[in-house]
Every structure is written in C-alpha cells, then in structure tokens.
Length: 247
Image (cartoon, rainbow, N blue to C red):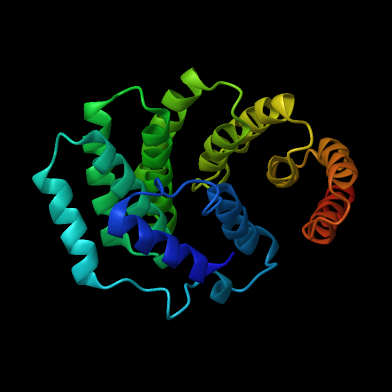
C-alpha cells in the first residue's frame, strides 16, 4: 500500500473534490481487512506495517475546515458523501477514533439525504467496522452488519461487501464461525477464486475443526493463487489442527 499516494489523494479531495471521493481504487478496504486479520490469525506481519508514515499527515486545521464546511451545508449530499468517505479512509489509515466518529456522523447525514446510495451504505459499514476493530467495541462491529446487509439487498452478488459481512462474524469476540462460513460460501458462489474469502474460509473451518473442508478450500486457494503469501501459514494451521484432532 502506497501511503504517500493515499495522503496526496486525500489532500486533493479536500482541496476540491474534483477527482471524486476516495474509493476502492485508492485504498482497497478488503485488502486492509485481510492484512489486519492475517496479522492476528497468521502472525504474518508486524503491527508496524499497519502504521501510517510520519509524512502522510494532514493538518488539523485542514480537516476541521472541511468538516465545518460540511456542517454549514448539511443538505449538500455530494459534499457529505465525498467528505465522509474521504475522512473514513484517512481515519482508518491513521487509526484515529475521533475522525472515524466524525466520518460516521457526516455519512449518516448523507444517508438521511439519500437512503438508497450503496456507496454511502458501504462506507458506513466500513467506518463502523473499523471503529469496532480498532477500539474493540463489539456493538460497532454489529452496527456495520446493518449497512452491509442493506447494501447487499441492492448488490446481492457483490463479493467484497459479502466478504466484509462475513468478516464481522469472523472477527467477533467470540467469533461466530458458522455465520462467517455461511457468508463466505455465498461469496465463493459468486467468485470461486476470490482469494481473500478463501483465506478466511479456511481459518473459520479450522477453528471449527472441520479439517476436511478446510483442506478442500486450501486446495482451491492454491489453484486460484499459487503464489499467495498466506498459503504456508494456512498449511501450518491445517496441519496443526489435523494433528490435534488425531490425538
């Protein structure tokens, strides 16, 4: 992930919004979620890899000026949507709980102006998800599901949204692996080669001691993405679980 590029993109958006709001092509949120979960589940990366670079900051004055402008124009849907989404992306990168809350406040306002906008639904789901993940607040993770569910009523085959919904169960405390697997199965029905879904599916199945199924999806992952960096860690998890079950 190129954090300098992200910061530059965000500054450009704050300056004019001319280039549109930050979306998946600026920061692939599912990739970020995958990295977070792999840190926790596979220990494949250190926490430092999630920390933003010191030169990717934006001044408080710039942020507050744009937030104040949004508050002065509460009926401007495009402004609320674009700023709320941009704030979410930046707050997530910086792990800034206060900015995440501000992004949710602004996105909520956008949602009230246009309740059927899928991008706003997903952004709200993402912001609540990250608030729950960073701050370990289960209620926020639960809140994210409502918005993912709403988005999926409009885009039922969207694999990214469906997998994020599954992740809310996968990362819950305690995890609900049965529900996670149910959502991952739906994702894989739409895209059998979706590697991130396969990675989490395998881990959910291992936690349930469903080793044969985990091995099946591990083979599917290897076929879909032979160079996937998580394969070795997943193989070790499956082997460890298999040994434990046989004892």
